[in-house]
Length: 320
Image 1: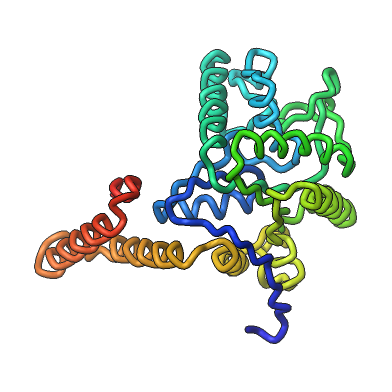
Image 2: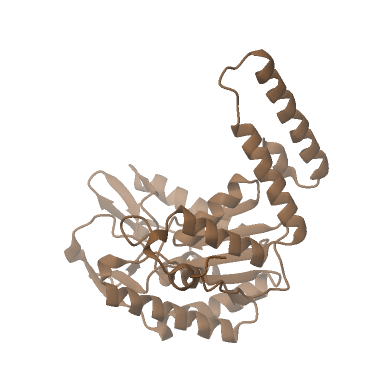
């Protein structure tokens, strides 16, 4: 361990991720990075039902809608130029026809509801306590979609607001899926456009709200992604040139902590075998002919069959 690292110890949970578990991720960049890495190694992952979202109210929005039996309709749609977007989704959700967009976001909502009933873990990553509200309706939006600034007002959420939204959500999730473990995290990405002092105030609000939720809900835990980067690594050589986003070294470091915290021994073996197989597939000979290429084809086939036999109870393994 580097002498300047604090080597922060994460919470030792009795319940671990098994490689067959359904894992859900929603929110800011931590959820996106971890989910993408696990998906690439054949874990059963469903991520970002509303796209990448930063504020906790918008992250909670689809779950609140599920609890209240509400679907999306025209009231959720806003228009920019010739495209339609959702107030409650990332800009990756868009369409040229509003009815097509409504259909897409409702399909995503329904799938998320189905997954919530079966998942073992739900990871929610809060990025910022600042929210943007439409001035005409006071609705908190997930994304401004490059609309004129005068259509929005910006403010900082209170701890009480966040807690008021999440307490009924956590109770509902515990009722419909008692086996679900909810993990709350705060993104280490610095929102410097808000201001340095304001970013610290925002992160502090999120951390205090999470502490309140964790203390009153036994199915909730906290993973210190924020502290691992800002306090354990605490050096700008672990950030990209913008000074805001953790670089690959930092992401890898956090992921190793994630593995040691949540992976069972079986899952670690599964992860390593999948990783080695992916490396083998990617180490393809330049020329697709000759003895070296034939040997590579044979090796890939043999390893694939071995993994399929070993993990035959996990159908997802067969999508190679």
